[in-house]
Image (cartoon, rainbow over all chains, first blue to last red; front, side):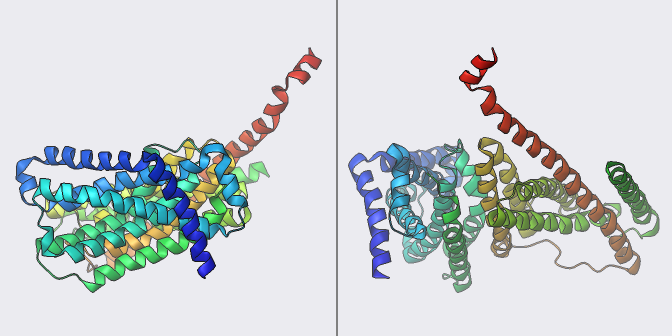
Amino acid sequence: MTQVLQQIALVSGKDLRIEARSRQTLGLVVVLGVLIVVVLGLGLGPQQVKSGMAATAVLWVAYLFGGVLCFEKTMAVERHDGALAGLMLAPIDRGVIYAGKLLSNLTLMVALALVVTPVAVILFGFDLSAAPLGFAAIMAGGFVGFAAIGTLFAAAVSSTRLQGGLLAIVIFPVCLPLVIVSTQMMMRLFGDGEPLSGTGLAVLIAFDAIYLAVSWLVFELILEP
Amino acid sequence: MKEVNKKIMTAYWLTTTVLFAVSVMLVFMWTPVEQTMGVVQKVFYLHLPVAINTFIACLVCFIASVGYLWQRRQAWDDLAVSSAKVAVLLCGVVLLTGMIWGHSAWGVWWTWSPRLTFSLVLWLLYVAYLVIRPSIESRQRRALVSAVYGVVAFLDVPLVYLSVKLMPDIHPSSIALGTEMKLTLLACMIPVTLLSAGLIAVRFRLQRAESSATETTEELEPQAIVPGRMGGLA
């Protein structure tokens, strides 16, 4: 078990080290996220922005687009100099490669959220102090499921022409249940002032478990240099 | 053999057409007009059978996708894409008939009610399936990515259902139907199911023909572009 965790940390550490040195992905997704928040804020107009509730939906849009870019970039790194072939030759389970990539993507998404969320909170006058832990729990649940599916499909389409915005077409419809559940929970938490419901969280965790299990199972089939 | 197949298909489509005509007659001439909704309620006799057949088409796509992942045979991929196409068509009809019903019952063409949202997400899931395929050039890769997507999309269906349950609902959860209405609904179910199965079969045959044509072209192409051979021929 410890060995598997070490291998996951190695795969993920390699990705994050490359990112720390090049800072290609994070810079891009953070600017994209902020731009999305600003554009939607302008588009919604002062009346809608005042309510504060639009912030959660706007944040999801920023996370979704930023996330897709993260998934693409972490797989694109492996396309250079036949790195993926090398990774596949390594004496590790393909599931470990998946878990490592997932961890890298989650780290990048958390970094994105740490910058974009305060921007949206300020620009939309969103009162996050009402339930900061609830917000973090819902978003964490959403992120894990989203990244699970995103990592799988980014690997599936990385050797095809389906890069760029097209990856979003594959991932978004599958992730819509996550968006529905989390926005409904946010509305209850911040709009109606209800406490965080166990049922909602259980549904989110169930989603994550199903997405993770399916992705882990089929990842081996779709990985090719 | 080809002649026999042709005759069977003609008989199949003739039966479907006749049964459709009978169902339409039953809907408009036998069943009573519903009191609150009026004649618009009759769209329900198409709506429910088509909705059930949408799920069946999605299930066929899922089974075919699993079959492809299992055996890597092109026929499975052809069946998966054929059923996905029919699923998109049927789900589109469900959405349209649902909107017609909604406009009459609630006064708006669209409302974010759980079931409408569910149908929309289901439609989007399978539209994405069809849209991504042409972007993948390699035939094997296309079939593989589609099969993975086909499996994930079908497993997503119960999740979508669970998620929309959290939304406020104004859709009727159960409808009280008279005996004539129930019988007509059953009568409508048969031609709609025959139509869906027939459409999948026709699409599958076309898809098989397309695949074998592509296979033949791919087998011939490398020979045609070898310069030495061309030179030899010249």
